[in-house]
Image (tube, rainbow, N blue to C red; front, side, top):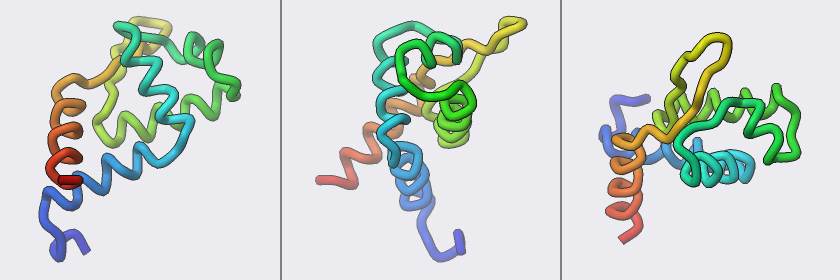
Length: 96
């Protein structure tokens, strides 16, 4: 299926899929306001179970919008600034 679509279209779709849930938007807003957060910090801010937040973090990481840095025993999540810039530019171009 990927052969039928441009890399730009595939990338924009992946970003949009990751942005397609209000909890993920909330998580991104939180991460944009801080340097980094562990999952427990996010759970304190958002009224969702830890397992649910972890699943949303997994989807955002899969799309490349965030990254996780392991600092045992925790993972600190932050915005992947390079991919965030790429996503903003791709969506801006697409929506014009």
